[in-house]
Image (cartoon, rainbow, N blue to C red; front, side):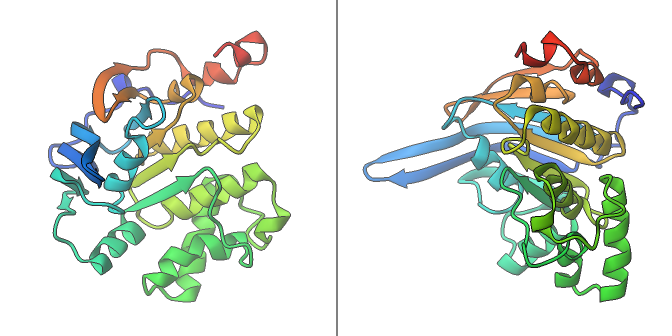
Length: 259
């Protein structure tokens, strides 16, 4: 397997090409007499091909950050933009259109339609967006090839392993011209070896130009990213760059469990 291009070796994205921007974003929920500050004044920018991991304890704001980035929720203050498009003020239909065309989610529990084949699951966002069935199938086949499942398009989800199902979910998340992958603990339901394969795939997609935001509690998985940001009590408290070659994390031996 070819070693990925690290952030220091990747050309800088041209100005104005930031895929995801969170600009002084805060989110407060009303809970009785005491408001809950889920996020407070968070600033993050993700360029094409950048891979960012978000870490923090439970309740630190990780899931809220992903929901805001994907237009599933709106900030109390600050601005969220995807591919240069501010999300504030957009209708529900417009937000759904951005999710179908510009970004994709990957979850721990896959969220696939069990009555559809792998190919039909991947093609679904395109067909919902009005793409004809034949064209959607062709584009979905390309996505399945990118995630390493070119021969399994006609297989139903229940006939696939957990790792294969997560690859289908990732294929659905990047199908077409989607430029942003939002992943919430994508290896949580997988064994460690299969989890490594999924992380290597996400790293490969980033090296191909997909912007990635990964929420994880595993330092081992966060190490695949170019940057790691740390949240605590809704605030961004630290940020670091990954210095190791992530492919070394696939090595057999004691290091596999050293995290």
